[in-house]
Length: 145
Image (cartoon, rainbow, N blue to C red; front, side, top):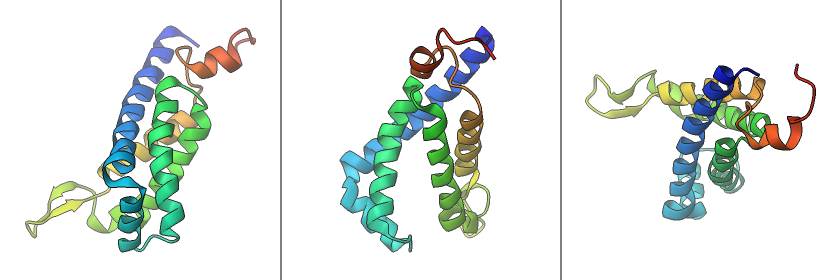
């Protein structure tokens, strides 16, 4: 892979990883898994105990994995699935934009979730790049595609 492409993928991984680590950190260490489960239950998420636990751990540890470029495709697929559900179950009904609506209330539209979804999908179809643990552990020394 050329250096420019690898650097571009690294930048995407860094941004996505930092966002997920931050969101996962808040879920894990501020709200706690119990708080996330309660929030998921109040939103009508199916099996909130399972979903809340999985999302919390995925965001924190998956964010670290993406940042390091470890199991990038697999973690990105899980992020994409999470955000398909988030868009359909929570954000779509609020429209596209995040911010005050015409009613003066703050709405969590799907623009941020949409960006996360498509960034995750992009990473799921690309290799993690030369600046990744995936490259060091699984690709280094293999013949280039």
